[in-house]
Length: 309
View 1 (cartoon, rainbow, N blue to C red):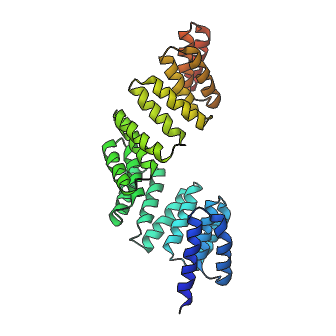
View 2: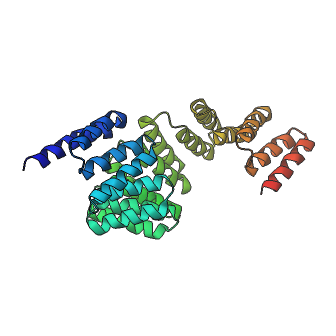
């Protein structure tokens, strides 16, 4: 009668290795656990999760399918397989797995939250919000569910509701930069740019290597008329990610605002090389050419923008 607790304790120790960011190190340990107990559905499921985190989706699904053959009522196994399907873009299969997990365990808050993400992927934002709300009702300290409900509300332009959810997520997990980042975006959408900058600052204090954060903070500074500070942020974004077309585009616009058109053209040329299908880039470059009196090149750019829509 003592074998099962020992097995579960051993799996728990392996899981801690895998979930600390060492899935490759954990896999041979799962292999050993499975060799010791080939009917251990949990070992197969958690090994599948480790394979998924390594990007080996075929092996992950093979393990998860076998786990659920061994134990069809393993709710967490359905959630793990559902997340694997979601990462593969197989949304119908993901939805089925999450729904089955809820059927097996109606108190499983993560199953509701994960199903809500699929509903959001499918464009049913109201159903997604209801799912996140159910997850929160079951677990009022579920920071990720607040954050994700805020994202769904923001997609519906319900920015005040989104801010309230992001604030709750921050209160629960203040070391998560994404909640500050998302709240900053919501504040910016309401033209509360100083509040947005405060949140971007907080997010950057937690993750100073996110180029997108610098782009968004730069946009907030630009909206406040602090063009040079915006340029500094866009330049930092480019230093972090030299392939980020949005940063070159935004910096090019700032140089145009300052009537520094040669620098603007240099940035806009790079942005177009990186993203040749965005009509806004051609319009901006056309305006820079026109400002320099080169109406021939300006006309070519305007026509290209019109052709792209």
